[in-house]
Length: 323
Image (cartoon, rainbow, N blue to C red; front, side, top):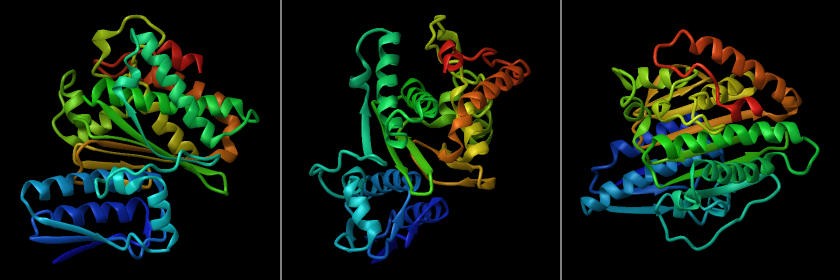
């Protein structure tokens, strides 16, 4: 029997190793996922490993192989937290039995479905996404003391969510957020879609997943440019660019898709066996008062860079500039 151990701290690096361990054990006759040592988790690796376990369990079920879990009764904080935020049902390890609804400083694993967004034309859909993003940003910035930063965070979340539904060929995506006592906050958004490379291949020539990820983070890159309507909500391809730049300036940004992972904490692209896309924005909210001005600087720089990229949209959407 093969045992895949969750680490004491589930962060970006340990999650990469865990995903690899799951891939190696996929064809083993008997496999156990062991949670007993888990003490601390972060949102991005939680969604990352959750998607990996979904695929792991599905593949093993298709081969009629035995899969079990142990350590879920551990009293350590990490396991208690994972159960609280709905990880076991998200990962397909148990049936959903209800769960946390969130609090002032966190959002549990939350599913957003396409049916929630199909309420009319594009403008109506976008306003629904805005409403969802505003609720998420309120977790990080509760109350009215930091309205500007809350709007900024809502913009980032909105752009990542709409990217998922517009380009990933999905019916649902997942989001999770946590703010810590030192003012650092982490937001993660995941989907089980077609990945960045397949999405961009419809509009650009991309030779590898590595090239696709690098291209996706450039301003004005979108596979939906030909469908622009002139609406304030048109996808101008600036969402991932702006979000990644915010991560560079105020914390960390990471994206895993099409078999590779790119992070501001690692200079090299890392191979990772993952179906779908997971994005992380980790930020220091102590500096959030500067966000609105920084956003405008990022948009302006993005528009200057987009002019030099063949096929890129040269102007950010009206909504991007409005925020």
